[in-house]
Length: 557
Image (tube, rainbow, N blue to C red; front, side, top):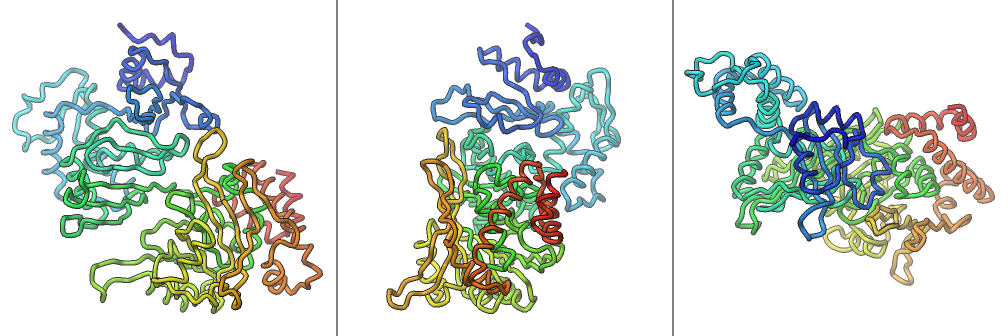
């Protein structure tokens, strides 16, 4: 029985169904099982996140769609992340196309940039295929090695193009996942289903099931693209995929019982801005205004939390507050950070397995001290490089880094014990400890919140402990931030007043300024100044004309 288009009220959905037979076939099969018709959206909106049972389809490429399916037959608590893509052509067509390509691509040099690679392969396909209006008997084409042009029946073209590009230019079956900007993490856990972390809907299970050999073949093929050989001799690999995503691989069944596993952490090409972070309530306007004042005065900050708590996102969002004419050096194991500053040096470690040719975080931090930066950003401090970071702070080079610690007590314990062994008397060179976590928010959903912002005061010789004060605390009961109010910031008195040449009696002016900056950020959000680089330009403009003038100027936008 043909699909009843009358049940579809959305004209855009009807257009997509008629354009893409594989989408129509999927929706027809899905609804024929008694499931409700999914909603269609060209892009996910804030209201979609609030749906208790999101039955949604959205496109990620011109031929690929994602279905968030709450009506699953499994009872494991997972909604499904279903990839709807063109069906592969019959094997004979792919075999012929592969053999032709092997012969005709001998002189082709694949570009490093992924978009250019896709364009090159697509141009090859268009040049070396001919669309036929009538069905083609691929068994009668004769000697493949003498074939110059492959005739392709029009109904087979979409599947051939999609799967040939995926195989020759992309990352195989992972292409649809990488194309979805709504994903944070993709997990291949070994033999079994693939799992994802969705920005709007949390943890989802993909019906895609991979076997041990299939995973190994995929991972070995991918490793050739990012230039790191994965093998039983070197089974643990961290690398960057062509689209900028970070992948961690543990290879082989001998060390991963279910077979090779891989986790891909996706990064948006344009980071979230501070105004976008504020819309999610990860921190409030006053907290952001406080960090604006502190970073503009060159304070050293550790952004702390567990894995996937949003540390790197917060770090990049806060870079808008660093003066645009400052020089910044970033040091990372795997490049993740994107900064809006033009005077930005980005460096990464190199692990060759040879101590003479490897370049460590420790080496790069020492080099950074000779580069005269206004700020040093370290992707994550984990070991002995902490000593150089604290030396940098002590010599007037402020440092911003992410760090794994749940609270101030854990942070101090980690940095003062092996392998870091920072003397307690030197800990005060770190000015601020910001702590972030993924917590249960309103409605039971997992949300990211800045849990506290603390100022480090110094070493108490009598008690043998490090003194600190929490300036901001998140209240889980109300999902609001508690601010201790005027007089709560020791850094205002000890650092900011001194740097600005102000007197103790002027302390109140700093709190007035804090409130004005908070209002500016709120107004920027209301005016929908969201793009990462637009926010940076706006903050830079504010610095040029002054807070009051900029606040008034926002009213004219």
